[in-house]
Image 1 (cartoon, rainbow, N blue to C red):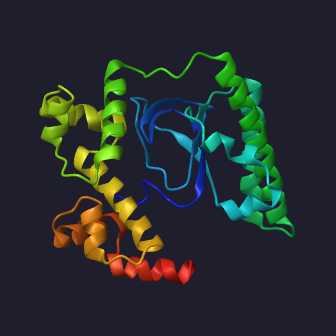
Image 2: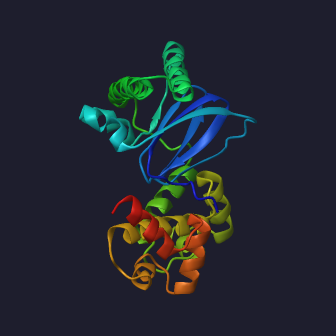
Amino acid sequence: MPSNHYHEPYEIYYLLSGERHYFIKEQTYKIAKGDLVFISKNELHKTSDAGVPNHERLLINFNDRFIAGFGEPLLFEPFERKNRRLRLNLPEREWVERLLFEMLQEDQEKLPGHEASLQARLVTLLLWCGRKLDRQDREQAPYEHESPAHKKISEIVEFINESYRQPISLDFVAKAHFVSPFHFSRMFKRVTGFTFVEYVNTVRIREAQRLLKETQWKVTRIAETVGYENIGHFGRVFKKVTKTNPLDYRKSVKRVHP
């Protein structure tokens, strides 16, 4: 179970070539060449195959502090909208790619003033994207799911996100949404890129990490709060997801955020 389905930095994903499916929070987007995707911090996400072999992408990761000095709320608009995919025409793609490769070059060469140059280019990109997303949302039809299956899984993911603290099983969720367990299991994996168990565990462990960081609760209480009745099982799943145990994780984040 990879540990990078969510992370502290914001992420901008640009697809240079190919096609992908991109699951973010509760929606799955079909991503084509020249699309930009915006993932907020600690937001569950995963890309998966869309039937087209090979793809290339560029990623930008940054934290709040990197552009905090600008004090402009529009910079974070792309990460807060319901629709996280931005479609570009050819001239727009050329401009965005030029800007992204300039940022990549700045980061690699690290010449004097490279951080200020990166900040200026990132702010330019985010402001432009925020304005374009605003126009796109006003001019285009509301987001539509790719298929009825995608809509059904989006509803189920929303249900899991609200109910993960309670005992929850594949059979229970499938029955509650009038789907056979076998079909539901295959459909969930195809749409989200996660298995059902992988998704539930990742949601629970992400919340456990937050509680370990922000509270002084005992590990037993945190395990019960996020849906684990057995502390041993919680510890095993936590280590599988995060590559460390709960107490060591708490110590590490306290050192970074005393």
